[in-house]
Amino acid sequence: MRLKRIKVENFRSVQELEIELPQVCAIVGPNNAGKSNILEPVRRVLSGEWGPRVSSFSEDDVYLRDAELDITIECSFEPPIEYRKLKEGDAVQIETMEFLYTRYKRGPQTGTRRLAQTCFDETGKQPNVMTGYAKRGIPPKFEPLLGIPQEVRDAVPLIYIGTDRSLRRQLPSQQYSLLRRIFEDINEDFQNPENKVVVRDREGNEREVARIERFEQLLKLVMNLLKTDEFKRVEASIKQNVLEQLGLDAEADDIDLYFTPMSSMDFYKNLDLVIKDHGFSISATEVGEGFQNAIVLAVLRAFEETNRQGAILLIEEPEMFLHPQMQRSLYKTLRSIGETNQVIYTTHSPYFVSVPDYRDVLLVRRDDEGTYVVQSSLAADNKRREKFLKELDPERSELFFARRLLLVEGDTEKLSYPAYAAKLKLDLDRTGATIVEVGGKRNLKDFAELAISFQIPVGIVYDKDSSDFKDEDEETEYNGTLDGFETDDGSVRAWQIGRKHEDAVRRAVGEKKYQELSQRYPNYTNATRQRLIAADPEMPVPEEFAEILQWLGSAA
Image (cartoon, rainbow, N blue to C red; front, side, top):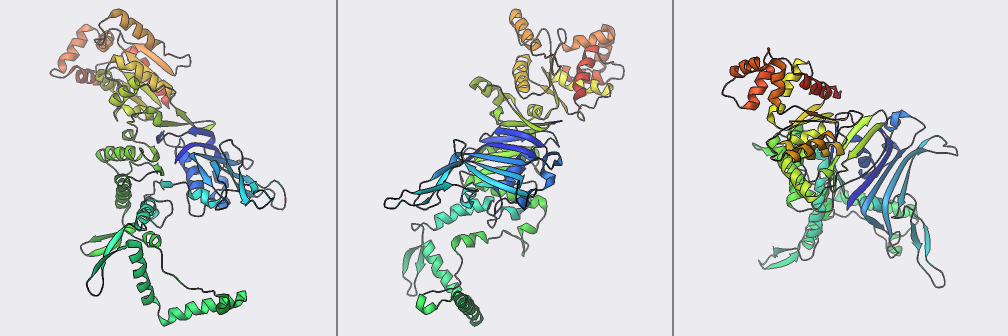
C-alpha cells in the first residue's frame, strides 16, 4: 500500500497544501519552514491505537489560531482499501479518508469543536455499503458509510518514527511500530500448521507437531499451574455474578465464562528488549537516548534484511545521532526498504538527498501565506537521471538546503569567494547561501535547470572561454543559454567573468601587484593560491566578485 496523496488545510503553518507522494520521499527545508507540519497531521489521524478524536487537536493547531477556521486532512491510498460491513457482503473501495476538525453548526452543542471523519471512493463520493443480505423478493440493503470504521484505519500499515527515539514506541506492544509489523509476520508463520517442531514423549519417542499446537499445549499446562484456589474462587465469583445479573442459568443455558491464556500474538506483543551488561539486566527502554536511537535504527535494518513489505514509514530526521559514514549507510537502508515499502522522511542532511531521482525531494518553504512545497518540474529523462546520479554527491546536494545558490565551474571560485565575502562582512552561512562547484562549465546548465525547477534563487558564474569547449561557436551558444536563464525579478542571475577567474583579480590590482601576490604563495595548486590571494590583506575585492557576493549574501 502507498500513501499517494495528502491534502492539508489550516494546520499550524500550513494554510493549504496538496502533494503527490513518491515511493521514497525526502522532505527538506530550513528550520521553522514547516517540514514536521507535513508529517504530523498524517501521524495524528493514521496512528494511535484508538484512532483520532476531537481531543487529538486543539486551537493551537489551527492556522493563525483563527477560531473561525477548520482543519482538513485528507489521505489517499493506492490501491484503495476494501471494506465490508457484512462478512459475505459486497466490498466497497475506499481511496480517501477525510478528517475535519470543525464545529457543530446547530443544536445544543453549537460552536463546540468536533472531528468529522468520512470515507470516499475513487470517484470522490461517499460509498454505500451493504448492511443487509438479499432475501426472497427483497433486494440487499445498502446505506451510506458513516465515519471511518476501525477496520479501514487498521488496514493502513503506518509506522512512525519521530525525533523522540523512544524504543518503547517501537516495541511489539505498540500497534503502529516497527517490531509489531515484524512480529505480526512472524506470528502468521508461527501459526502455519506446516511449521513444525519435534517433541519427545515420556517413553523417548519423537514426533513432529505443529508449533501452534505445541504452544497451546504448553499454555494449558501453564494455565493449570496459575489456577490456584484463590484464582478459581475469583473466576467462579465473576461468572456467577454475571449470570445472575443477566438472569441466566449456567447449566440450563450451557453458558460458561472463564479466563483463557494468551494467544501467540499476545505473547509477542508483551516481549521486551533487555540489555545484559556484566551480569546486570535492564530493559533497553531505560537506557539513554543515543543507545535507544541505535536500537531503533537496528530494528529498521532488521526490517530491511527480513524483506518486510507493504508498510508506510514516516521518519523524522533519520540522521539524528549518526556520524557521516553511518548516515550514508542508513540512507542505503532507506532506499532498500523503499523498494517494497513507502518511506517518507524529513531531513537536514545532504546525505539523505543524494537521490537517484530528484523528484523524490519535496522542498519546503514558508512565506507570509504559510508553508508550501515545491516539487521539481524538470523532466527526468534517463540521460539527465544518470548524470545527477553521478554528479549529485552529498556536498553538491547541499543545494537543496540553500536559500540562495551560486553555481561555479570549479574549485577556484568555490575556495576564493568565501574569502572575498569575509572582506565584505558577509556571513554566507548565516544567510543560508551555498556555493556549489559543478565540476566544469558543461555542468552549469544542468545544475541551473535543477535549481530553477525547485524555485531556488540561483546565480551562475562562468568564464567566457573554457577548456571544456573546443568549438567557439558551440561555446558562444552555450553562454547565451546561461545568460537566458536570467529573470526580471533577479531570482536567477548569470555573470560572465572574462576569459577566466584570474583576469578579474588582475584587473583589480594590476599585473605587477598580481605577480607579487602570486609569488607569495608558490608551490600551491592554482585553486588554493587564488584562495590565499583572496585572503591576503593587500588584496581588494574585485568589482565583479563584489556584485556577485552581495547578491548571494542577500538571502536572509
